[in-house]
Image (cartoon, rainbow, N blue to C red; front, top):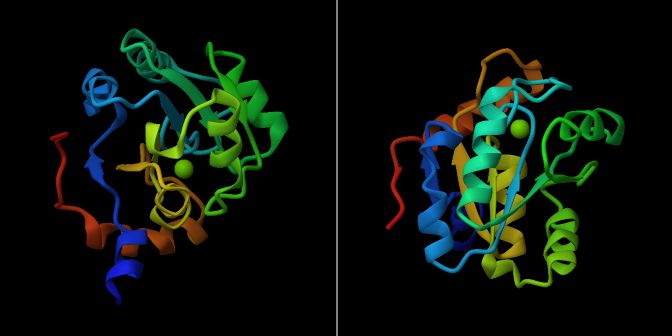
Length: 169
Ligand SMILES: [Mg+2]
């Protein structure tokens, strides 16, 4: 694998879950916008109602003074329904690993991609989109192993990358 190609598939940081991410440090480092994936990042796969875990995460992001937005490949109907339980805006059918959704979110927030952090549970969608867009890429472990076989197949690749940095420096 070439160096450039490897970089596209390597997150900047990895954490066991969203509650381990130090959002205050990200804010101190100059980041302004946090983009969060829904399925198996904020929520259990397929959820359409936000739970306490998600509310806690959003609370921490907002306490750190960061703008938070949900960015998902899920359909608009479920994404809107899910986000309604949280005080955040949502961008559905984002087409990750396309950079379209991330670029639109940065433009709307009036910030450069370098000031944006994308957090998700999948290398081939979340991390690749973040890398291609030029923002910070954080990979978290999936909240549950209950997910479609198509996604389970991609996990083999993700497991290869685990064991790297899990702290912000
Ligand atoms: Mg996901």
